[in-house]
Length: 379
Ligand code: ATP
Ligand code: MG
Ligand code: MG
Image 1 (cartoon, rainbow, N blue to C red):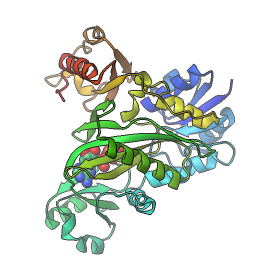
Image 2: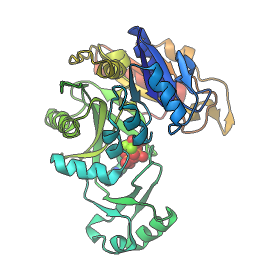
Image 3: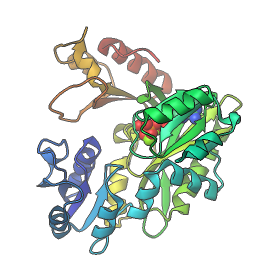
Image 4: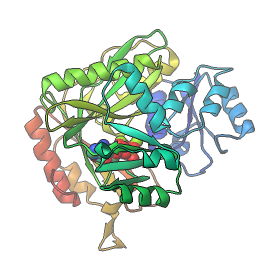
């Protein structure tokens, strides 16, 4: 069998490896961490950093095609690999997703509305910020995730102080919008331009981290759902994107839809697809890489996904026993996914629980029972 490679050894790489292996591929992971979740389950583990020319050459030697699971992999590494083998997504697409200013400029180019914003890279730009953008959220242009690298600011003085606090790195200031709720759409686009999508996912974030995703018809009003799918498709097409792409949206209190950001890979909000769709987001990633046909996935069950953060392993600040999986798995339609991480830490993504059922009401009822058992706040 051919070997498919992934840059990054986190949980997304691990679930990619599982999907690739079930279709008969060998997998290779490039990650410096000898205990990375994906490295532990792959046939080959190249233990170097993303910029090590020897590691990249070894990966290229092993693989028929390469993808990434880590959003901040240097785009140059992908471009280097692309000289000798198919790489999806392309370094050029990943580079745009890595920079909030470039990302927003792309949304504007595609005619997809995003939050009003200003780039802040110089004191002059800071001084020129329009009062209309306040209160707002200052976000570092690069490297932020799970709400890290962000500060909420109400006044020009708070904005200046927050920018100083971030070391005056390149940032964008976004206007704080009144959110009714958040949703996301995952699309997969092949080298031939064929494009398919997963259904609209409704997402609940807590402390800047995804907590719950619910997917069933009616979770988002039909007109916004259609707009979100169309917007995700144009964002992917505008990049001439190849691979799996997640587009995050805000639905505002007035019902309008605004794009938030993109992730150039499978996404936490798409994990339900492992158990509720006939094709998962990871199988879509494999199909894109291997040049296999993309068919529109079909949802066969209503789904709720609960993220399992490291906090669940702690009680009153001290590490406690393993969560009560036996009680959770006694509930109908529960699917436990754990990432094999050596150590639980607060806010670390340790796994997720997919709940599937014949109806949205049942899925929700079981998910709320599971949440109560695990100590996850109700939603
Ligand atoms: P991710 O882990 O999804 O990559 P991130 O660190 O890139 O997260 P964002 O998606 O930019 O962060 O923001 C995190 C959350 O903060 C959003 O999901 C939303 O709940 C809130 N948020 C961000 N921007 C705005 C905004 N302009 N108005 C209101 N809320 C916002
Ligand atoms: Mg992000
Ligand atoms: Mg986000």
